[in-house]
Amino acid sequence: MRKHIVAGNWKMNNDLIQTETLISELKQQTKTSDAEVMIAPTFTNLWHAFESTRLDDIEVVAQNMHFAENGAYTGEVSAAMLKSIGIQTVILGHSERRAYFNETDEALSKKVSQAIAHDMRVIFCFGEELSDRKSGRQEDVVKTQLVNALCHLKADDYKHIVLAYEPVWAIGTGETATPDQAQEMHAFIRNLFRERYNDAVADNLSILYGGSVKPDNAKEIFSKPDVDGGLIGGASLKAEDFYAIVNAF
Ligand code: PEP
Figure: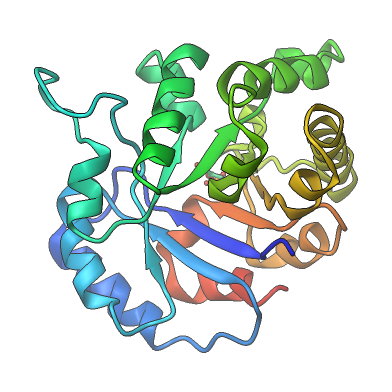
């Protein structure tokens, strides 16, 4: 059975002190939903965040990693390094990585395989640009991103995969896909995996929605049958807002 997940992507925000403060505020919140809670601080604060949440119902995840095992990749971080500090889950393919750091489907496909080889869970992000939606190409674009990066996997590998549909036009813009737009795309995605793999892969795949999810729109978005949670940017930086979203299930 697929899980409800709410993950906070902190991006390049919060130094060590701010990380400590936000984590202590998060710990004061009460969780009333069944959603798994994740936070993704920047690399330098992962270890500290992991240690500070050891006894709490919060998983600390990474925002990125490299596809190589090790070697001459200055500035990069490997799956083994993440695992060595207790990190079990990594966000891959965020649209900001694709746009500003030229992450290609090919590189992402290698990163996904590397994470799985290290028995890690992947939150795989994808989504169309505004121009794609305006020209009605959103399903083709999303299908291409998913097929290129994920369809080399075996059915059994999908126990490591969480999908995050994030229309680029809705990220950090205050513009949200309507709940019906999100449901329509999530149903399309689930069906794609049903056709490519089987019912078990499709039905067990958690598909998160990301793009300006806030306390006041989360409940309606999460009420849709194929929306299994959210990847939250801006609103994950305030403990009360984040837990209002977590508790929207
Ligand atoms: C994101 O960056 O993944 C995101 C969804 O950001 P925001 O919630 O701020 O739109």
